[in-house]
Image 1 (cartoon, rainbow, N blue to C red):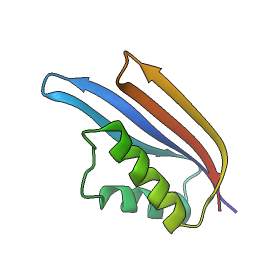
Image 2: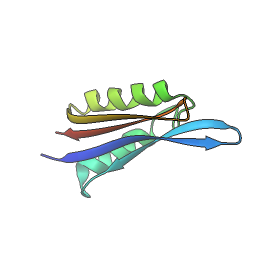
Image 3: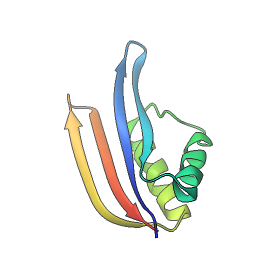
Image 4: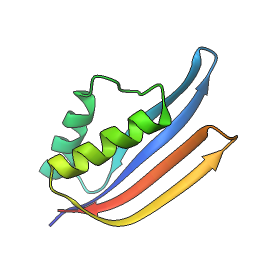
Length: 88
């Protein structure tokens, strides 16, 4: 069983805001496969917080991971971030 931390990190840029998905955890096949799936997303980095959240939840479902912990943070109104600790 692998444990991963998946974060949706906002970035404020001159051309607008974007959200990047980062995957943290021990090196291994589970982490590598999830990172590869993130790289394959059509909208990464996303231009909207909800798009990033939908992408993360879709990948968690696709990989059949169990969400063990969730955190939600809002920065400067529209810059929200998500953190998921998942196992599978």
